[in-house]
Image 1 (spheres, rainbow, N blue to C red):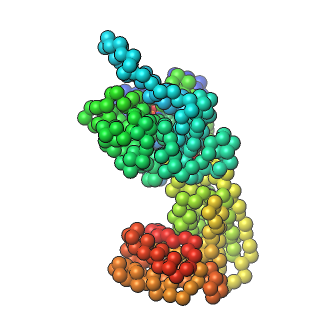
Image 2: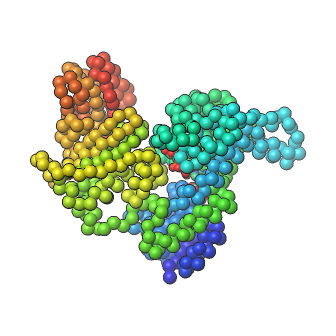
Image 3: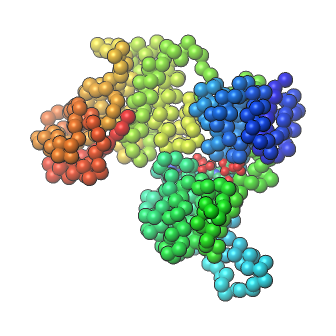
Length: 534
Ligand SMILES: NC(=O)c1ccc[n+]([C@@H]2O[C@H](COP(=O)([O-])OP(=O)(O)OC[C@H]3O[C@@H](n4cnc5c(N)ncnc54)[C@H](O)[C@@H]3O)[C@@H](O)[C@H]2O)c1
Ligand SMILES: O=C(O)[C@H](O)COP(=O)(O)O
């Protein structure tokens, strides 16, 4: 009989499912950390929400643990890498509380517009003040949604039914998805400037950390109101407090916080009860959502303990070890090509990923290679931690076409992997080979090069003109940046050329600006100019 620990408060319905499936269930939401550490070795499965910390110390002691179920969406309390290293399946239940988060967002927006919490508090304090708590209508106002995913798209639909004009920013979403719900996609800056209400629905990633800070609040209209029901670290709390203090914006409604639980000592927003509404991370806390996530988590834990794969896995499943060892150099090569591509294409939205395998690599299953490629290309933009299990599913969900082909390679190289990305701003291609001495890039955008893919690079695609190499070399020299290696390829004299420079230190944005100015002065029609650190 498997033992399952439920270490946070979840709906009884989840516990019933576990018991009915014959699990030996311990429900211990109030357990001390010491007791938790002492007993964790006994369990085969665990269900948590956001309160239980499944860190390295806990996982090191969890000798029998086979599956971790997160009854909810965010999983920053789980050390995923450690769990993966230890072969523990980790999954979440991201669809279970979507509607609750959507409705909480709408509730916050209406409460902000009509001063509902403030008026309620005043009345409870025996104050009747109809003038002070006069509100505004949301009909006809513009709602700007940052992140038009599961929650953002549903907030949009409901806001439209209130007669709001909804716009959104989501650089990674297929435009058809936005078109289907009549939401025009705009640049981040346009959304910030044009919206009466800005609502955040992005995951927490390096890019979205403090996505709203001093600069963004300064760009907003004085009547703008901000809503955050996503992740606390998406907003720079100190900057928001300053914007409120200086009347740069009209108000904010915040469900998630940089530091939870919120206390007067760790949150300056508590000083502004008239402008700021705060809830204690209640977005997913409804009877329905609690039932949904508990039922989903319990069913999945039972299923995984019966040797099935979870439906929303967050880490890598066990693969045939022999197959994995043989394919490993090619998995590493394709991952490196994918990492480079992800950085090279920047913010451009991917329409398709194509990979062509040639030569010896065709002796092995392409599946783990293609999955690794998709994972490495999409990783920087997703917090739904993409892995080998869910990579294809996520690509499909995002409207990205993944194509794989193989050719019989007849050249002198033993193996070649070519990756092509089609984006909304053009095509990128990169070919590499695995040699016993390491990985080499042999082609960029169809132009022959020969380079080791490690370190820091400047890559520029431009129209071949005399003087380019000299100008870039001099500019980098003047900024004390050493060029370790430089490769230039071109189709024809005067045709499209690509220059890849391996450099010893990071160029400043001013240096990149100077290079761009020189290239423009030489009339080189620069297609792209990027700095990439591998
Ligand atoms: N308050 C709560 O209790 C609660 C409950 C559920 C979910 N959440 C949080 O809500 C957030 C959204 O959840 P979801 O289920 O809609 O996720 P989702 O993955 O379906 O949607 C997120 C969207 O953000 C977009 N995105 C990523 N980076 C972006 C960027 N830099 N700029 C603009 N858009 C970007 C993605 O393309 C995606 O479409 C998550 O952070 C989740 O943890 C909070
Ligand atoms: O990520 C989530 O699912 C929400 O933020 C809710 O978290 P909770 O399970 O701690 O309420």
